[in-house]
Length: 234
Image (cartoon, rainbow, N blue to C red):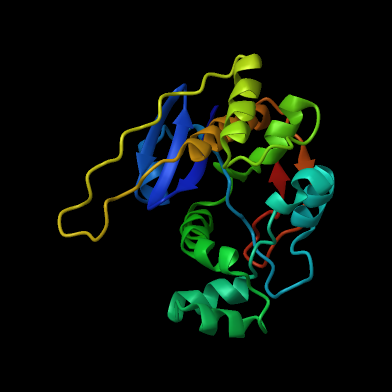
């Protein structure tokens, strides 16, 4: 089994696998394009609490604490399943926010579409091929401590690229943006440099999961009501 790293990008997903980056419109399409024996690390919540809890899942709180004051804010609380289920029938922010008594940030709301794609796949196919990975934990492992520079700044991108280069991790060329489907609105997926660097770090961590050398939070992950492990790896 080999590892691949996946991160959401504007309008789709970017995947780093065996030194090459590709871009896909859907998570299901991405999974179908990879060899069946590939373990896919994804920077997106897998396994959700039923309802809101302060600080989110155990995995969210532990990852935040591990990254500390420097990068802990990069770990947002995964929205509860109540928010996702409401989004599926009424995808507007006020309605979804009301379903969880106001406990939903705009950031979490805008990720619900991608969370739904991953949730649909793992509920239909199981969790054997998909594992949640947080790239900042991967970069922390490479750096020996949290990376101070924000990833969306030029300094942050240079720092993370340097960490990958120093560890001998190949950063592939940024993939071209595919043409939109005929009749589709918008320009199709677009990959930013921070998306590509995150996907590369996640691919490195996915290979560590395959090799049984990756970290895990919590050590004994609980299951959500669909039997999905709520854990974060790196």
